[in-house]
Image: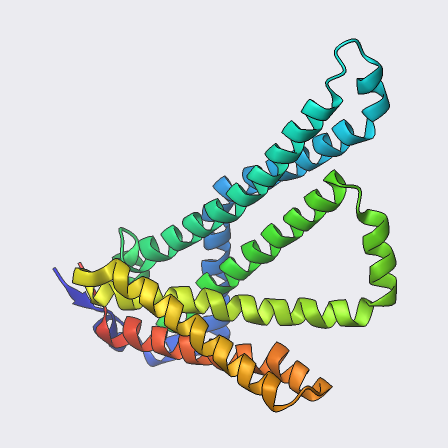
Length: 263
């Protein structure tokens, strides 16, 4: 049986759209999303941290390795650095696969009908997915940074740089979160659009991502060429991703609310 998400929402009582209840259910959805994805992502991130520590150990014990009869320091160093870099790359790729899989399963797969039967609006479902991906994106970035600094002994330089540029780093970190949100929502939009055009699904998804990133990049380039002031820099860092996030979120909501049929 095909059921439109709009019909499911229209049958809900009016008080189900109360703001307090919406936030309560949003946090329940977020808790479920984090629990479902943490089963795979947490062990991977822990493995990245462990490899970072082991790589640092291999580098720090250069004298011991060189004084041994086998003298395998350089081989060990290369192996550990390769493992660390490979695991960092794998962690990013696996995070993307897991989180996109969670999105498709929740909206288009086996969990879709149950999710849209709950007394929770589409916006709350979409927001919980966004916040979940943001949390894991920040966690993945933090794990990668900590592992890299540990593996290649970069903590002293980082702390020295942070003391001199702490305000700029905090602003950059906040802007990074905003831009990460806009990219995540662009991927959501690509998956939503691809689902309603199943015949050319993959092509449409790739085109949406390419076009979206190109448009964002052109806007950034235009603002940067128009003015090089600090105000323009903050506009690029904060305002541009917020505007695009709102646009991508609104389009995703409209597709999921009015154009999506779940079987």
